[in-house]
Picture 1 (cartoon, rainbow, N blue to C red):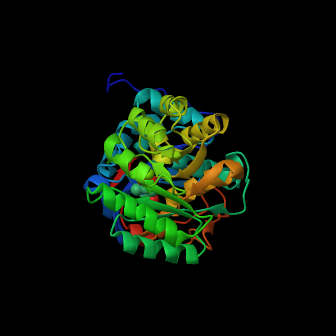
Picture 2 (picture 1 turned 60 degrees about the vertical axis):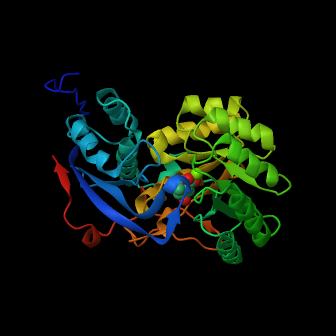
Length: 382
Ligand code: 0XW
Ligand code: MG
């Protein structure tokens, strides 16, 4: 489409219309610096917060927080994507989400992380217009509370074991052990062994390389840890290599970074290395796309972690609503992203309690961003 063409904005008689888009960049600082393989880190990471205003007086909120060097996404990419989409969005009816997002997809192909924030905001509008929490619109609430995992930064094995013991003492039943940050595969064996012992029986322990291992290193770690009750997560960048590690170690495997659409979910399943999978909203392009991924995973049999890459209360609330609408027997866990960082963008957002969390109760996302904290927007489109 040429940029001088006017996109078709379909207006429904008497319907709600989008009047303005606003964007803020907010730095989120981790309570504990968070180290992953290959020098990836979440110390202070910028999150993109958007507000979609309507002529009905309803504002919807969205958020995406891409971790640097983690996925093909960056926080400052949201502003140009929104600018590109503005002609399709301003004046369109947001209620129901799917119709306007289909036009957005036709106008700007791809960019799922930017569309994720937009999609969340449109769901928030729809839920507020209906007077219903998002989990009701996403299939209905299936759980009162959902299990969380606690992710431990890749530091010395003994320190990781101490953090795991503390987390389990506070009710956490699932522990993610970051691996590979120091390039010594024997230290990763030690990390898994120490955390496994500290966590105690019945606790799920899994080691996540965030794509930072070769199949050789990951296989050596997995075989040395093969008598432990542990799962491995995303050791290598490709599904083929993850499958090789799965086959050589016999350890269950969770896919994360390389499972991001229908084709990769099917490939992970076909190659037999998707015992579990991280469904991050911004990999798929928001709640509707992740709900479709969720439904495919129900069919494929993979256990699901419903979350996002990183973020504060808006991204967390969105993920919690989808997690709450997912059959509990198939939900591996979810993540209280906002519990790892400050500031809290919506101080009324949910917090973990005894290793579990509940979605917010109000209409839409059910969280109220702190206008004072956000200040003036960095971008306004109207
Ligand atoms: C995306 N992370 C780095 C943050 C979440 O807590 C989990 C983790 C991952 O890669 O699984
Ligand atoms: Mg991961």
